[in-house]
Length: 155
Image: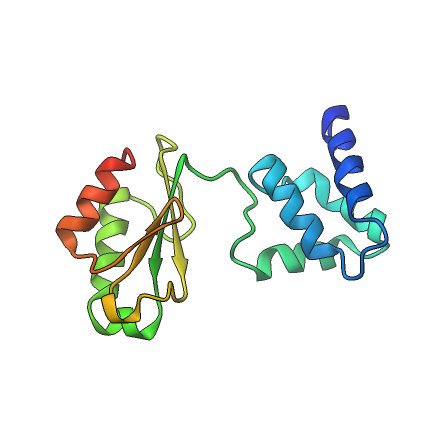
């Protein structure tokens, strides 16, 4: 059950999208921008407002990888999983990140410093493997560069 402050915040978010055609995705983006993730206790509030089921809202949240159901780490590291990056060592980079961070995809380190996410193409196909750290794209990621990036992120 959402607390009073969360309910008020949700009223504001829902009011901003009132009358909008196809409002669910924009609402979810606004919720995540506000809270940093989609809290479970707001799913029913959204469903009630849009006159859809909780399952429909949950289905959209879980379908799109950019939505989170828990807070992300202080830094978000995304590693490209597209074919071009895989062809030049992307899988090895992913495995090294798993090993260094001790988490898998969508995991957050125990110290809360880094969340690791897959991404499907960063547009650096000629400079793969590619990664993104806090919205900064990095090309030609090798083991040493990955280690530096993770160290700078506090992992």
